[in-house]
Image 1 (cartoon, rainbow, N blue to C red):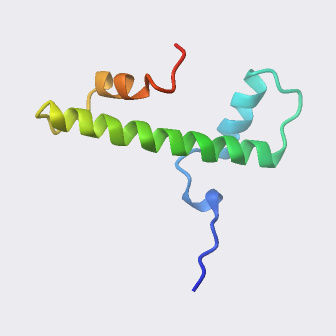
Image 2 (image 1 turned 90 degrees about the vertical axis):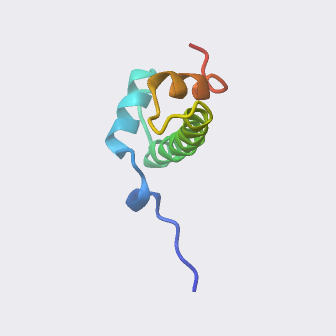
Image 3 (image 1 turned 45 degrees about the vertical axis):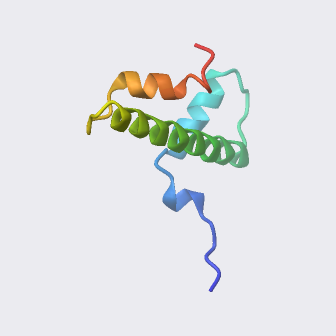
Length: 80
């Protein structure tokens, strides 16, 4: 049985937030497809960062993921 991928049902991010981000970034108009693609990409990046942060907290002997774990894990994606 084939399962149809539907990002609208499974995403942790709201689509309206993606429109706002694109608008704040200077977009005059935003297509539904661009907002959905931004959501998909941000979700993928978020999962990679989260998994790395969880690994870091585990290596530090903690069960709690701290902000510093997330910051360090995000460095590979961040320019800030």
